[in-house]
Amino acid sequence: MKWLPLFVLLLTGQLMFAQPNIKTTDYEGLKPYLNKANDTTYLVNFWATWCKPCVEEMPAFMKINQEYQDEAFKMLLISLDFPGQIESKLIPYIKENQIDAEVIVLDDPASNKWIPMIDESWSGSIPATLIFHRDKRKFFEGKLDYEELKSILSKFK
Image (cartoon, rainbow, N blue to C red; front, side, top):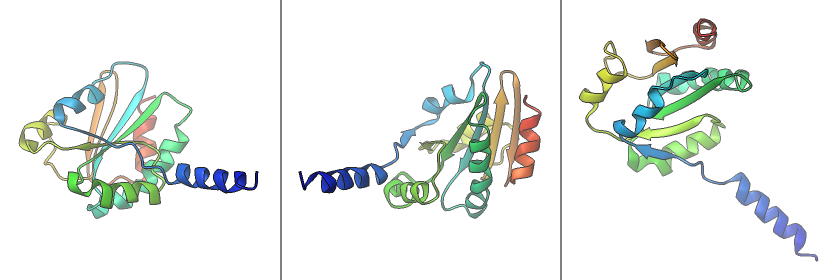
């Protein structure tokens, strides 16, 4: 019986430090996430841990994700981190910054092919954000702050 508290403590510690479930895909695997025709507003952010403006805007995105959690809203973070750095950089960043949105690593070297499929105006620089709801789509290249995100999302209601 004296081992029970230690067992509970160990189990709790293991749950707290569980690895986030990170999916890796190519553009073909990502396409279904970019074309949904339902009552949900989708915010898809292309970013990487090595991108300073991406990291700077992430707190605003997490604040929005929390504020919209009870609405028909889904945030998807598409990481362009290098696959070899998922364990060493991406997962620690997600844990340390309590990223609560779904994260998918896009591992597709044919960026000249898939970038214009996301949006014809996209130069390929990050951060970049796609927001859509049914037939309405808006694309933003560059860093967005909290007020900009709030204003943009208000137009999708």
